[in-house]
Amino acid sequence: MSSIAQSLEKIRNRVTVLERRYERSPGAVRVLAVSKTKPPEAVRAAAEIGQREFGENHVQDALTKLDALADMDLVWHFIGPIQSNKTRVVAARFHWVHSIDRAKIARRLNEQRPDGLPPLEVCIQVNLSGETSKSGVEPQQVEELAQVVSELPRLRLRGLMTLPQPCDELDDQRRPFAALRGLLETLNAGGLALDTLSMGMTNDMEAAIAEGATIIRIGTAIFGPREVA
Ligand SMILES: *Cc1c(COP(=O)(O)O)cnc(C)c1O
Image (cartoon, rainbow, N blue to C red; front, side):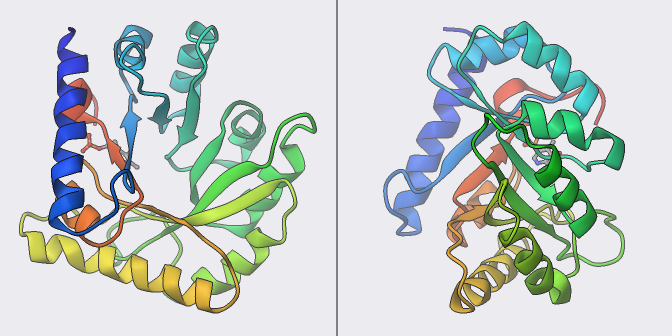
């Protein structure tokens, strides 16, 4: 077995342990394998043991990889910042977008999603750790943006995503994730039916699973360290 396959097995086992520890249903947490900066062969190694969902944060790099892997039945998630001039290709080539933080981008994706494809699955990215991080909508604006997105027919709003400032203590890591869960509950109480919390990476997956993550986005623990961050 390749070392990528071994690492992926380890992550799956850890997820199972953490689902039990935090009284989550078995299978409640999905692993999104974040393959950004890694070559197509790395994706193949993970796909060979059944991993289907992969995350990318750079449009151009991702396209080369998507083309190289066109023979495989994979589900591609876009998790990085989206510029307006990249929405057309994201709408055409990806299945999910986790990083919606402006109505303008959502509207463009909606207009540009090709007719023959099912709606693009999307999450709204929320900024829960203050001024230093640039991406994500402020918590006070989530409800308004969720209303806009939920009315776009070629998008299907699935939930919320966050990417907090790194920190080491489990309790500190849990705080923004608990806040994201609270926001999702508020939206659902207001009439939406959202089922996705995209939160948790290599260093804070336990905190995220404890707070209700349904998708954890794992790069380093599966593919090893990246040369460019
Ligand atoms: C790179 C990245 C990840 C994966 O981070 P790791 O610490 O390598 O697991 C998750 N989410 C986003 C948005 C990323 O850009």
